[in-house]
Each structure stands twice: as C-alpha cells, then as structure tokens.
Image (cartoon, rainbow, N blue to C red; front, side):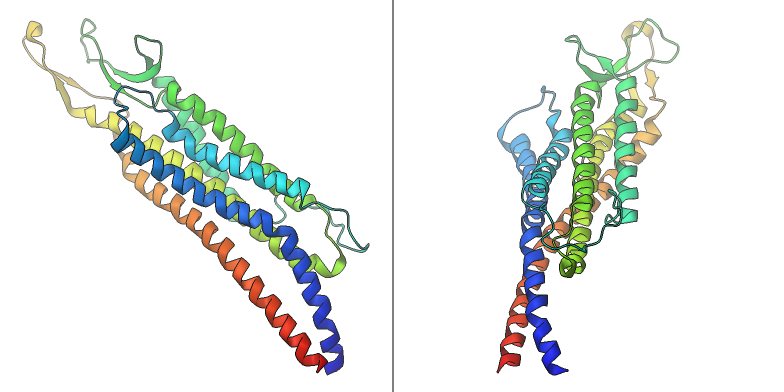
Length: 308
C-alpha cells in the first residue's frame, strides 16, 4: 500500500506543476491589474490635487480611469488565455461537459457585478439627460430654475453630465466585453489531461473569481466618484439667490436634491468596498503562488523519502 502511494506522488506532483505553470501568467496578470488600478487612482488624485490646477478643466478621466485600467488589464488576461493558456489536450479522456462563461464564476459575484454595471449605466444616463450645455456646448452644468420666476436665469452648477458620462459609458462597455471574454475563454478551453482536471478546475475558479472582483471593484469606484459629484448639486437645495431688482431673495431647490445627498453618503461605502475587493485580488494571487510552491516542495520531499 505504501508503495502504491509512493508511486502516485510523482504523478500528482507533475500534474500540479503542469497546471500551475499553465495558469500562473493569468493569476499574476490579475494581481498586477488590481495593483495598477489602485496606483493609478492614487496617482491621479495626487496630480490633480497638488501638481496641476484643473479647476476649469473637464476632468472626465477621473471617472473613466478605473474602468479603463481594469479593461486593459483584463484584455492582457484574455490574450494570455488565448495565446499561452489554451493548448490541445495532451491525453484524451478529459472532461467534455459543456461549459459556459458562468461555469466557474462565483454566482453572487456575477450578480453583484451585473448590478454595479447597471447602477453605473443608469446613473450616467440619467445624469446626462438632466445636464445642460455651457457656452462651449459641453454638457457639464445642471441648470436649476428659480421657482415662479421665468425672467430670472437658472442657477448653474458643475455636474456629472454627458461630457463626463460618455467616456465612462465607453469604458464600461469595454470592461463588460473583456470581463465576459475572460470568463468565457477561461471556461471553454480544453483541459490538459485527465489527471490535471481537478487542479485546473480550482485554478479556473480562482481566475474567474478574481476577474469578477476586478470588474465589480472598478465599477464601484467609478460609481462612487459619480455619486459624489452628483451629490455636490444637492448642496444647492437651500441656496438663496439675491436679486436687487426684484426686492426679495429667491429660494432655489433641485427636485432630486435628497437623492443626490443620499448618494453622496453612500459613495464612500462603495469606494471602500471596491478597494477591499482589489486588495483581495492582490493578496489572493500572492497567497496562491506561495501555497503551490510549498506544495511542490512537499511533494518532492515525500517522493524522495518514499524512494529511500
């Protein structure tokens, strides 16, 4: 019995090494993507706050940058899957069950990501619809009319209009496509051989989970930025505009001010949740790499001991 167990160790070790080498680039790319999104977000805030004066600039990239960074990183993962991670089976008999893009993905993670995508889409479209153009035709204002005074110009405040929203929608569409692509090609590629199926399934679940976390996290960060920007319009709900020609001040109220303020309260929660997910992806990639290295060393030691 001991001899049989000893003879199985080399096969298990080889199968584990083959699977680990096949999926290592994709797991590393996901960890790097999460780290890059965090670094880009921090760098943009530092540059915008302390280096460059962007007081009168439409800084649309503040909201599109997390989505663009995640899209680029996941595109690299797709390329890795198609070029290096997809090969013909080395031995027949591997699982041929039909697999779809949801096969290895975490169900609740996919649902949460879809909800975050939809929330950002609805927020961006609704904000764009109520926005107004400035003198240059840029939809960056929210015009709040003065009640019962048609002759008085409306109050105009900077707002998350189409000038900000269109780049976000483009990046959100790109992120949706590359996220689906990673999940689809990660699931549909063939297994190497029958003895690696168990390890490969585990790696594919990890890759799918990290992909969903990156997509959900960056969408939450972008959504938090949009909600925080929209909340600034809620602060004018009690703004008083003086008018000497009319003899009395006017009370200006935006009809959606309460919703805007509530969104501003929720924005930090979404942002924190997004960064926590990104840190999970980074930590998971590092932990898995170390765990499999330890496992390989343990298998090698066990084999040497059995051969003595």
